[in-house]
Length: 213
Length: 213
Length: 213
Image 1 (cartoon, each protein chain N blue to C red):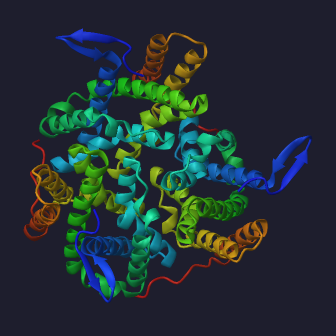
Image 2: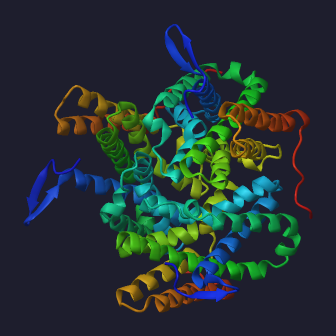
Image 3: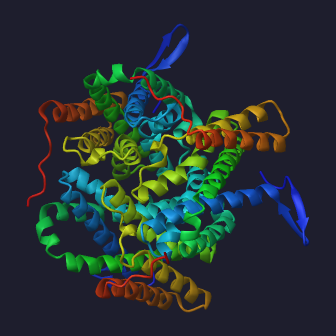
């Protein structure tokens, strides 16, 4: 899933998708760090909790697929998480006042994680079903672990559309790949789709129908 | 652990144990889906929570044994879980009114999961200790994850005999295998034993003695 | 990480570090077993919960590093955990009255687990960052799982220095190894350092500063 948009800046080759992926890690790490700051934890506790949403979902995905865990192979996401933790620790009042911005950044991270996770699983197993499941897991499981460890009401129990957006992104990506659409287009269309679904949940307070009683 | 009771129906060769195993997955999935429905989650949330009890214990077992995760190799259990989630979502009032039936189905699933999990671990490691532990994990851990994620009082904290039944089944199976009893007999005697222990817990409200104070 | 201090007692070669490691397992297992006894669980439940702190952190470490899970390779820690569970089950009032002693034993276990975990990860990956992270995970994650499953306030949310001590131990060990200090010295200096940090937390009620508000 790498080296699609290589760009050269100051002699350094940059991969746009990898950059966006690290942005997702950064945003998810902030969500964990702020939850830990709210619980009055120290800098080490904040860093540890930040790791759960930032790399937890992808770690579970890699373990289930039996491929090397991504942040053991390349530790950049860990350093990005550390940076997010330190920033959150010292600037939490500022960040909390920007919660609205963070929700949108989180929506983008969710969309990207779900699609990239599905892509990695599709490459590893060739199974659309496993790809969609791993896409949802990459996007959602890290936040679940954060909530469970922090004793917060788990994210998945909240009413707003969330896992559904991950599902939409992962599903769209597998569909477009199955139709042999060019990979970059598949990727960004799927990310946009997942983001749009999540945005509908945020903006309209939209939620899927609940079970009949 | 396959192809013991091959039966032919309409030209399709069926493996009885695999069928029963899928029945266990189905019943465990319903337990997760109903817990999610009670939390007022949408269909994607219900499906995700259904996966925890249905495949969570076996997933942990396979990861610890470092063998391929069973539902990545053969996705049938995932489809069965999806079916259980959809049925639970739309028919939850009906299922809730049949809770008594579900408890017995769950007891059967627990017994079968524990014995099949022990068998798989025994084949993989040759260690009776690891086999018994993995049998209990296969039967019990999925439900624990479901309860933790759903913010319910964890199953293992409830008074009734539960883990004990899994232990009885896994232990009996290893004992009978050690005595070179024919594999099918070992399997069904152990399942019956685990089921009987759990039944005693359900019917008589029986529980093992608590620690002296 | 083995066979450094081989000692012969009655013709049996003993490895001091392995012995201390098992002592750590024993103490961590007691912490889990006592939590389970407080929840009024039966002997099988107590044993299961005892396993989480005793082997949970190291299990996660081994799975992430993709090396064989340590207690599947050598089941001694499992038997030690069983012994701790049985002792805790029958002697919980005695142990509860010795809580002060247990806190110090736990501090030693934490220090040793963090350092040995870091050493194992350093050998497996060569990365100091991964080593420090796996050291902290080995020391802290098992207790987190115990608290989450038992519905207790997670350890990491408590104010006292805890993860910080694991970090100090794992970090010191990596530093000394990087300076080519002899391995036994690195090990014991790091363990002493982690223990001292934790001791400061216990004795002085010391905690790191919390985030600015």
